Image (tube, rainbow, N blue to C red):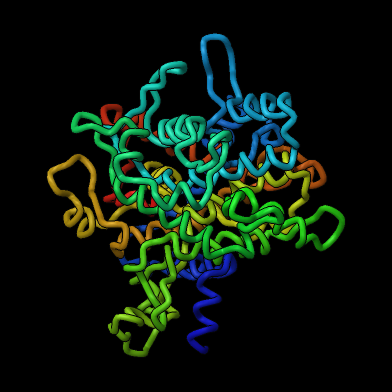
Length: 447
């Protein structure tokens, strides 16, 4: 295969699922390098996930799709609140069009997702109105409050947008202040999160095809929300857009957002793509260790976790507020992050090898590895594949006939769901830190 083909393939959703499935097939033959795999325990994970669905939603059909919007649905003493929906109602009451409301929410969602890598156990956010939040919820509320204050906007009279002009000049101090970072309240990778947002500003400037919008000019700088205008021109049937078009915006339009020091082919940074030891066994050829080819392309496993998290999150806005239908959403995969993956370890589906565990234990209670470590790559690949297997079992066990199964089924399994199950079992087993069973050293740009 040509280098250009491999680059295109490794940036595709198809490759995420196919490469992870290759690792899963090796696991079935006992050929993983860093984990033991117990297939018999997948059913118990599916049962646990279904028990949470029934506890919180009664039926999988009632579970909302997994996405960043969920971080803005909060419980308060006065009842449940949807902070995004509240803003939309206020904007409409001020004669803001529904289309512009959708653009604004896309602006918020994009910046909120890009800063949503793991915050660490020591950080929290104190909101004057809503109280204390930690981890992903805290990051989400902090991003919302910065959005409301106009931190991401260059418009003198409209704080409710994120645009290239403002993002490009965003300082590390701006972000640290917005996240209430102090020596006593450290946030992992704070400076790297700020750089991601500046990179987003650059991507918006360079991606006029996606983010320029029909009204883009000097008075209307490029915004994430203008992608809705681009998508409206991609409809393949009345009001229907393909997931491939949304993915193109995310994976191509935001390519320069991600750090360039990761895996490359022919000088092209691939993003969240890593060499997998298990797939080395599948090759008889020597591997190249040059700067552009750290591994043969056939041994690379793409995940594109934040890109997929962003895509899952954008879908809800595009459908709910943009009034577009989206086809092909089944191409998206489950997210290979520490809650979904932690669930598999805590429930015994995956067991870290003694050698890897010893190497990862560095004085803490759980093993710790860098994000690009071979242990983490194998863990994430198995997580992608196993989330599909768990969703299949939930589908079979949920009691609904096929014609009553909700769309974006995997997204509802994640929300209802595996992510919640991973968090709850971690809190039960490790109540002091609530950490996953394997920790990842976060730089604020990956997990």
